[in-house]
Image 1 (cartoon, protein in one colour):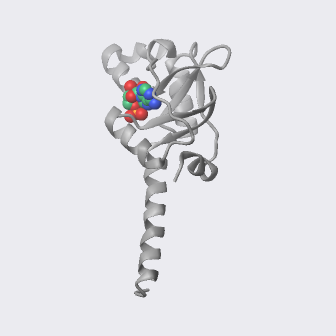
Image 2: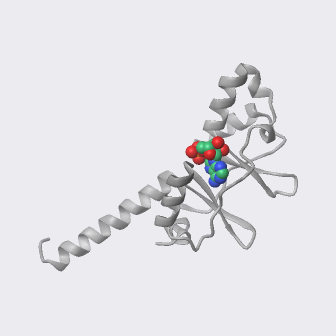
Length: 143
Ligand code: AMP
């Protein structure tokens, strides 16, 4: 299965925050939307980075409560790993495992078209494997 098929089911909304927002505002958005990461956009809505709850936790440990006043741009990861919607879900799983990340923005022709989390990928694999299992049972007549 390709990522674009996963996005057809999951949807293409991407939760984002501006790079000049405070960490406090970003944490509130993570809580409001109940997600683990936000894509960080610049003034022209260009992709500038990604901010995960892990970045927030790390910064709170390093700087204490004052960290919440910091700008998102100073806390986010700038070197964003992305992938095209033509990538297979299994390839994204490998990418996430190797890079130790749980969120990957999907970019087609320079445009942000979605975001997949490790939860989306695992869910889609389970559905796919369950279909395969049913097909095999049907094939051997053991239903
Ligand atoms: P995560 O496991 O996705 O919550 O993030 C773990 C760390 O990797 C954090 O420092 C994130 O900012 C960073 N990170 C998450 N997703 C990406 C990504 N797609 N590209 C680069 N870094 C990322």
